[in-house]
Length: 75
Image (cartoon, rainbow, N blue to C red; front, side, top):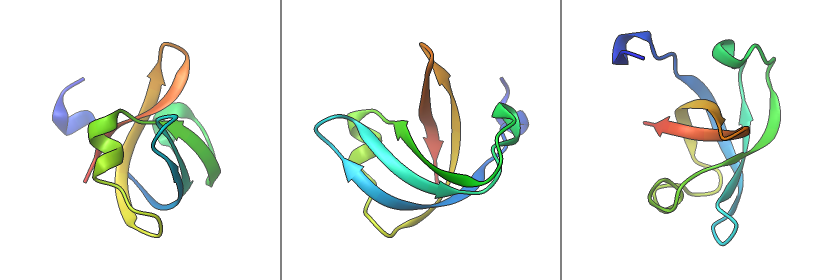
């Protein structure tokens, strides 16, 4: 997928479980996944988790990676 095609979603990090590589995000609609706004747990790699803080407002891209909802990009 080209960078221009990526749609970022606004969210707020509610909880981080760095050991498990999981992050709970309160987010707006995920258009690419056809999901409404809600609070859910996503997977994230170690490098991405290191850039996150609870209560932080983010813009992110989530996708299914090996069947698991995963944060693939963040700004």
